[in-house]
Length: 135
Image 1 (tube, rainbow, N blue to C red):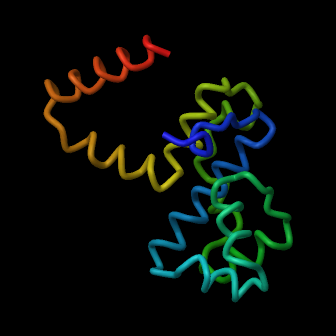
Image 2: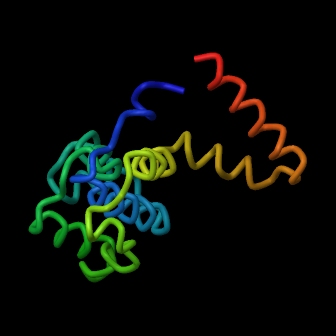
């Protein structure tokens, strides 16, 4: 895994990660590329990537534009926000997991893991624990 995927997410941007993940989810539901969204917003696709990862905060006016383009109310991007995030009581391990699961690599891994039988999942977990023990 790359350092980029495992970078630490601070408590202060856990909400940014959550909102960014919903932007990504909705964009994909509509079949819109990052480039198309960026063009509509007057941004680069790299800026959209940073928004979706939560590494850059989305301003209120830009979130309004994004919501309009993605045909959702602004509140959609906050609905279901875990209370732990609202209260800034999220641990760094939970924030790291959230950042990882919003990455393309994390989503592929989660989808593949979900397809495994319980016994194979246990084997994968044992392998991961063994690898971590070596570090």
